[in-house]
Image 1: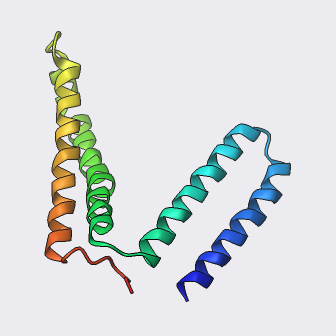
Image 2: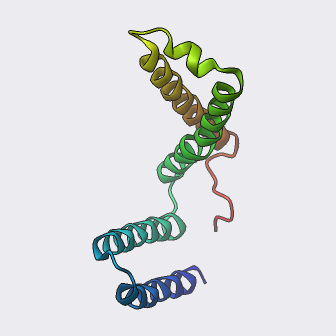
Length: 130
């Protein structure tokens, strides 16, 4: 079942790639996006067909880092915009940008740990896993 779905996705990726190649102006961006899509498809195939606990740990940490981290970054950006915290931090002349970067990196690290803990609670089983 999973193999047929992934085969259909692969065939539609190739078909849309051939079609869009003739209609896009910038061929380099198109080729790079097709390569990235192919790599993502390979990773999805590996995760679904050959499940392992180590790969699931990586998936949960990546989920925490990218999804939860992006949400925390948006909350931080809203706080900086609404309360003028960003202007206040930037007024610390030698260290203003470093404070911003350290907060953002801290949010990414914390969100990775949150993803790890979520995976630990679920025993590193992915959603809809076989």
